[in-house]
Length: 129
Image (cartoon, rainbow, N blue to C red):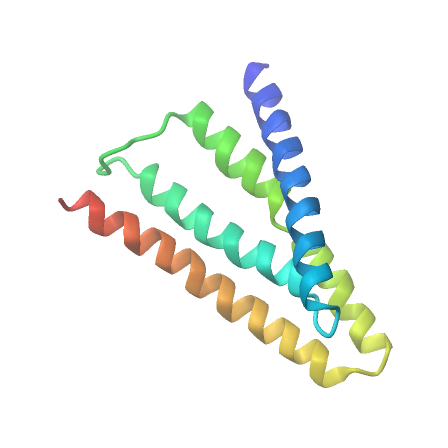
C-alpha cells in the first residue's frame, strides 16, 4: 500500500510542477504553439531517460523499485502532459491551424524522443566510468 501512496505523492508533485512550469513558459513565450506543454514534455522526457538509466541493474546508482515508482510513475507521470498535448493539438486542428497542429505534433514527438535518448545516453556514459 505504501507504494501507491508514494506514487500518489509523486504524481501530486509532478502535477504541481507541470502547472507552474507550463504557465511560466506560456506567459513568457505566448500561445502561438503550446510552448508550455512542449517544454514540460521535453524536460520530462529527458528526466525519465535519466531515471531509466539510473534504474538499470548495471548502473552506478541503482534505484529501488519503490523509488522508481515514486520518481518515474509518480513525478514524471504527473509532470508530463500527453493528454494536454493531444487536446491542444486537436484545438489547433479545430481552429483550422493545420500547419501549427502538425508543427506541434512533430516537434513534440521528435524533441521528446531526442530528450529521452539524451538523458539515457548521458547517464549511460557516466555508468561506464
